Length: 122
Image 1 (cartoon, rainbow, N blue to C red):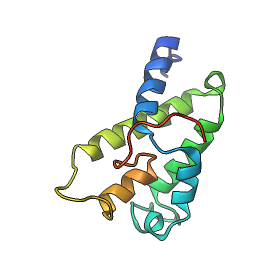
Image 2: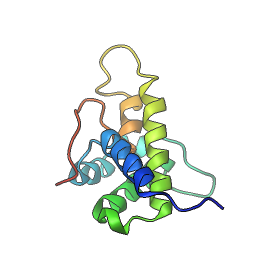
Image 3: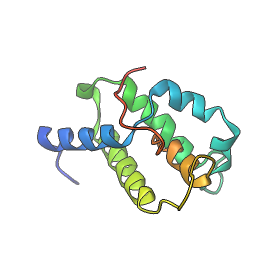
């Protein structure tokens, strides 16, 4: 079993997460209501919602909590989001990505590549 994260490790993970998740909670909730959000991603056998959409719901839960209330499981998910976004961003296709599955998949993980960095609010 891994020892609890140090305050420094928690801060590093939060900073990386805040740097990757650039959609506001309001924008992410609205995105989840779109057909495009439902069309992308991998769905595990026996489940009805893609892994990315499940991640978005978890991101919303994490964003709703104060930092001092985050659990080790929350930090693990935050690291997963950062890793996914960084890998996916490295595979950016050429040209306009506005209406691409690549962008939509990232948005299910809280990152809109057409936006800059956004703060936690809204």
